[in-house]
Length: 244
Image 1 (cartoon, one colour):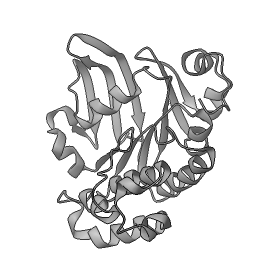
Image 2 (cartoon, helix red, strand yellow; image 1 turned 90 degrees about the vertical axis):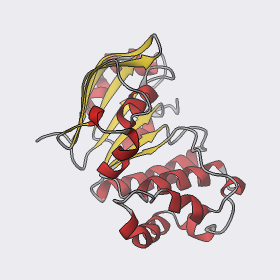
Image 3 (tube, rainbow, N blue to C red; image 1 turned 180 degrees about the vertical axis):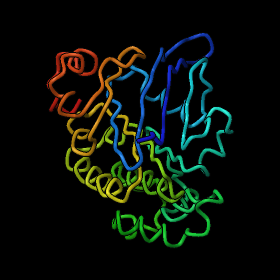
């Protein structure tokens, strides 16, 4: 099976600082893959390289058989790549619905904007209830729902989720990851960056552990759970079932 997304020998960072060194990973069509690691391990930098927010120093990124590094960042959305960023980054002074519509600006998504909106409201009924409310007045969990919903408005083939559980209560994490599981069942590929191993393991079938900018372990979730490399590179002395 050819991967939908492939990173090969990725070396990336900021200015003269190297964060990622020889990172390789793949995500197949319709697959959920977790990228697991502690804060500062290089997870977000990996996402930024895929979306074009930074340009790698070396290596290859391929999406749907295309050289992604040859595609301008704003055009990657129209290829079917959507990022739900860490920290939600909703627009607080406009309504929930206006935030969602901002996710459907690309040519790929405009014709189905109305249908996509209804799909998001079905996935997150709370957003439908609050559709006219300013986003800044919502709780952190509701804003995270909005951020995921806004990403889905672009009709992605691949959804990049950067720390969706960050700062949420255990109950809200459960609700959110239940919705992510439904998104996965629809056939959208997902690359999930997480520190919360328990939440990631609930939806991902396969994963990679990353530490200090290098992939230290990969395999099925069952294999990673038993892996000493996962314990040392991601969780340190913590238990894999903790909400790290």
